[in-house]
Length: 608
Image (cartoon, rainbow, N blue to C red; front, side, top):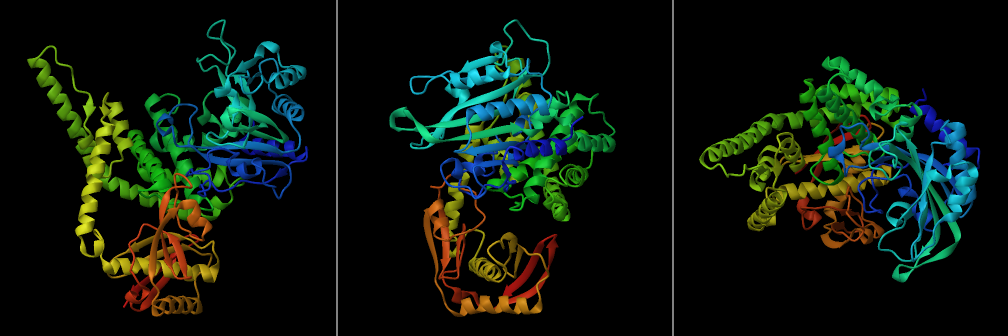
């Protein structure tokens, strides 16, 4: 049996022997330059270099890159869907092309991993009015020994890569590799085009040989690129003769732990199996996101909301498995200490922090979960009673099967139930949710909130001038911390009341008395300078180019963001609220500096 660690090593060794440089992995968290919250593909961080920028490591690159995709969270629970996964990649930036790449992919699959060449299937671009059929790749594949009947020509939607909506960018056909799960065809026409699931894609080679022109036309590039992506999780499945991704060494330890603490059998109990898969997958992704070098925490917006949704879904399935939700920390420890200890060593360093944040989210959600489920059951009972009553009165009555948008919004607003949780619970009861109605209720709620905000003192709803001043003080203090410890210093959390501020930030040591005095002096110096706090609104990309920073995940570079500038002291992307001038803040005094968790320090301070 090949392990995930061995597979990573084999991939990197194979390409290093062929002149490639292992460039390592980048953060899972999107940096805002690609318009997505997370890195969703191994090639995503390489995009600038595929578009022409020179890579400092040269023209032959390889790595194993962690990715997070959350578009199909609700599909997790079957044998093959995961929210975190790893892509094994290699690239040629204007170096080798189809002849070398087809040969190496074939060698890797057959000689290193032992795939039967007679069972390997491959798809290539069939051509259209804008670009010719990729006969070159097909002939190279046949020359390597792949059976002609196992090579399929497919259309642009299947075997072509390009950046939609762009002009002047590289694009081209791709060559996808498939392998059968088993040797029993569903019919005489069972092949890669069949929907029975027998054949699964295990990787692809994209050949960027064209330049995209106006009007949907293409021209040949002088310098052609190759972009290869093979899924580690999926390849590991095949290499071990498995049809269940949760039986590889990536998940085996976590599943064994869940079997032990629940007393239930993964193989013998279908309901328990689904719960174990969801708990294991979502906990793994949470570990990776919290433990990332640009780690995030659960919140109600952006990437933090996705993390919260994953954790809360896992918590709910702990109830289905009839185990204490805090057993999720045991699952997390398996991934940190046994599965990813060498591939992602930062997880070991941040273990205490990761586990403590998972526990915090468990406690927050459990406080509202019981009340929310009780209210949900009331909604369902109401529908069932109405259906029973109306069916007795009218034989032609069509039973109601929809939870109204207003009911779904009440669950969200009053009981902290995300819409997707209500949808999932409803589906389990054979019901649906009026999602457009929910969106309308949410919109009405926002309009009321805005009206209340306009009427509130100082234009602030649920917050006042005092908390606005404290908020401004956190900006100044962070600017001081970054000046002392470097631009990698970031806010990791804050809590503001009318009495004090609490601020968490990343730091590898306990601050000295001298450092605290220096920070206090810096903040008070800015306050004494009576600097205006200026708010502007600009596209995210422009804001970053102009020196703004902040924890923010835009939907695109053009998304308009609010930027608060304090002279030449600080420039942050932020939703507010703030004082109008630093002179409003009074005197800043640090009360305490302490550890919040591993690698995270906490400052408590007051304005006097």
